[in-house]
Amino acid sequence: MNYNKYINKDFRKSSQPKRHPALRWLTLGIGCTILSIVIANTQPDNTQNTELSVITDDLNTTIETFEENTSTSNDTNSIKLELPNPVISQTIEETDNENSAFTAERNWQTLTVKPGYSLSVLFDKSNIKPDQLLELMNLGNETKRLTRLHPGDKIQIESTEDGQLLALHYDIDEERYLRVIRQTDGLTAKTFKHEIETRLAHASGVIDSSLFLASQKAGLSQTLTMELAAIFGWDIDFVLDIRQGDQFTLIYEELFKDGEKIKDGNIIAAEFINNGESHKALRYVNPTTNTPGYYSPDGHSLRKAFLRSPVNFSRISSKFTTKRFHPLLHKFRSHKGVDYAAARGTPVRASGDGKVIFKGNKGGYGKVIILKHGSRYSTLYAHLSSFNKKIRNGSRIQQGQIIGYVGSTGLASGPHLHYEFRVNGVHRNPLTVKFPSTQPIPERHRDNFELTTQPYLAQLTVLSRNNLALNEN
Image (cartoon, rainbow, N blue to C red; front, top):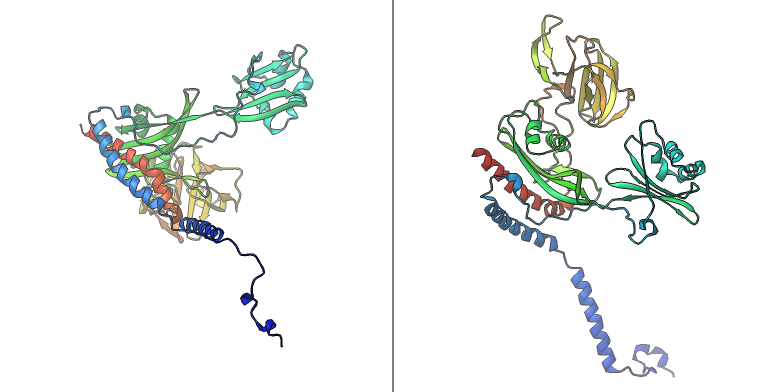
């Protein structure tokens, strides 16, 4: 009887030749090595936590050193920022190859746009054939901007004696330029970005009368001043809340091209001390959405759901009260809003994102717009002289969007904005109501937020202390 069929084949004598024992050990060694690498790579990564603790220790040491180096300085604007700065990336979409044919020597002719001039006029004066303009315009969106030239703009061209366009250079703005070149198959156009160098600068100031005068004295441009006011505008009313002795300190970018400053960049970090209370702001770009925002050091957004003041005003003519003598009705009645006196025609802005639920005339309110903000909040803007013509009932409105203009329609003794703020249908004082905040830094980005902003916060702390010390002296 043949029992071989009942015997496990694994116990049968193999017909394969024996492998060399050394080869088996070598294979086993390689496998163990690969396995150890895989296990090491799958271990929890504590690198960020380690980096955070190291940075925190380094920052404390750097602050002490920085203060020692600046303790003898009498001018905060002369302090050099010696702390290591995180890389500020300035994206350059594309730059010309230095060895490209375009950068070779060319016989450039510079054309200056004068009032009433168009590109066709410039080409005609330069003896460029009309068909060259048509070929240039047919290149699409890249050259479409040449139809919107402004007096003072300069265009460089190179052409042949018979009027054929060979090359064109046009600076669109400080950061971008258009280049056109004739190749074997015709004209080609492309927009490039200049290589922009970003440097950090800082300024500090003390308010004697107004933020604009103090910032001007500190060497800030009007653009930076407006940005500073916008950053803290949800918490500080820069008309009503400013006090003599208030202080500010900021770290901001300066953009340079070919060694020359072309403009100011973003505010990176700022502190505003209002009536003894410190407000700090740190700029952070969400790595997921790539959207920038300003946050407190603990990661809460400074942006609120509503603006404190929807209009630039000269004074508050009437405050929120339950008993006010009406100047036209000559009797006492509740005034459940705030009246902002302003020149006729001053733009009125939506205090928050929302939807238009009413636009039109409403009795003593005159021309009025009512916005609904989610399920709980609504705002009312009355006595308008006119509306934004693009706005309709049901229109979606963004915070800061112009919705109308100051007037004196309805029961109004003079041009002003009557502004009401309601929560669940109940009137609240717009000057004191606590506004809801937007979302803080997501937990998954918290470590990245601290790594990115802590060096700037350290710089800001030192500069602010020096500003305080100088002010006390």
